[in-house]
Length: 189
Image 1 (cartoon, helix red, strand yellow):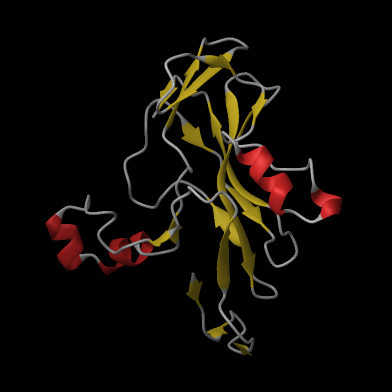
Image 2 (cartoon, rainbow, N blue to C red):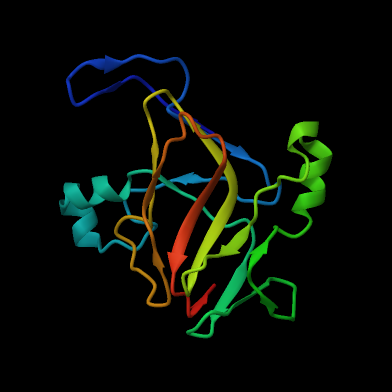
């Protein structure tokens, strides 16, 4: 996935670089590729706002929509336990740190020898109650001096069951999992 050009910096100078500003790499073969955010906030924006509010449509078109690599559910007991299950599975499992189903074997078959056994986890429960890290199955690389802001989508209604933490990942230097951290999931689907 490529999207890039020379972009004016706040100083008014041009940042020159070859290639795209951001490139996504799919490590989990089953994961959905990111799609550009759109001016209609995924079709949820009121028509009047879409027609007359440039500020709202411009903000809504900022960035990419990134998805988890599988449909899954989380259930939090309100204390220290989080349970998870995924599409096609009838049981619930305690969540500590788990791999995407079958990914550890796939990673070890395709990774360089020095990286074998170091596959990223798909879901991980934090020590803080109700906090979960979710890996998208993607790794991103940005042009020099560019980073990615990871956050909930702009102008889409928030879930009452969880809240995304926001973070900046220095993807011009860090070539690792593109993840998000969510707080207090009562049930996420």
